[in-house]
Image (tube, rainbow, N blue to C red):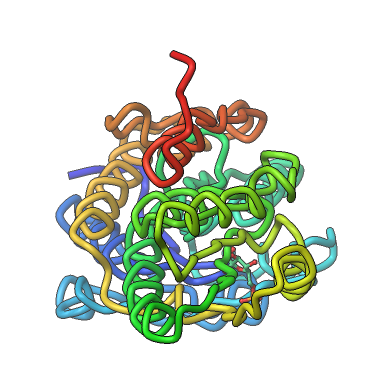
Length: 336
Ligand code: F6P
């Protein structure tokens, strides 16, 4: 029984990601097991500003582990970025008696959490905040993995496999945009998994002639009559790329923007399992009075890192994956 932390507020913020529900469930069940009360804050930081809450117990998080989206709703909240907005959130924390917050989301969510905690400290009080990385973009510097990425990859792969059927029948070129904001993780992992002819990602300057035009030519010379070009949304305009392909090769590509479908659906085994471990670790860190933390996946291990430090971390994009894609789908020579 823990006599320090008494009441945790848990919220999901930013773009939703499959597995967020599993993380909420893990936080609530672990807290309840420690005799800690859990209050769900609905609609992310804006719910903390408006006092939009729901009391949660072990049974209120039953049968959500398999559900996509987030039972707590989510939002992007501009007001919370201002001192004034956070003052309102602090008033809610005071009213509800929250001594800690577990915020499930991305980078922006964590920065907001840290600002909130610092502002509470200015009042001479204390609010411990713990972040759990959940975004389909996998773009959080301190964590090798973010909840939702695997499910989003699987959804995108399923869609692209379907696209391939029709592209193959009509002997066409498909140019598919996948999400990822400024990161190319989703595009590259998906590109490898569907055997894409070309993948364009923001981490690598686009050499259109070599990476797209020549790859399509090579595929044609090898006997292929349909092509799959996967474009990360951060790499450039998918319609412009399609037009360039038409101009260079005289073929007429079809553009598909997968969009928000990638954020929906049943969370994968990996996302449910990771979310469960991260939710458990978040409450453990609070019980152990560790202060502001981010729960991170580091080489497959779940660790809690100092939040301030973790927010300065960057992760190395594994460009080797691009070489693997090239070697496997375009028979390019790898220089080991
Ligand atoms: O961060 C998740 C994400 O889905 C990005 O991949 C995408 O750029 C963005 O959110 C879309 O945001 P919104 O849901 O506000 O359109």
